[in-house]
Image (cartoon, rainbow, N blue to C red; front, top):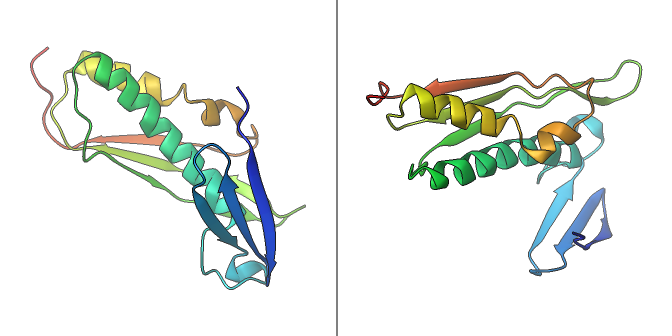
Length: 142
């Protein structure tokens, strides 16, 4: 499957991206620590965003197949940059908080699903991606 995205440079280190199929738009800005204004997501912020949203989406697909409603689940991603030897993303720690009671069997299924998202497989292997799950309520009976 191919999806077209058209990106236009608007000046001042800002780009506008348009999703071909839907027409949805968003703007990126260079981060403050790299000559930008930091007024929107930076391109590297979007890598962390893609990882977190992909993990949650794949978890939700698995959850729906098992009648589990993951509404309210949150994902927090921290992007850590390094500059040696070249500026790049170093770490993307992920914390997934699930606010519902889920059996141990379903916890394992959902955790496995999160780790199989396409972005997780696509991110440069040198980027550390530790994932922590927080299960807020006690597990439901098995």
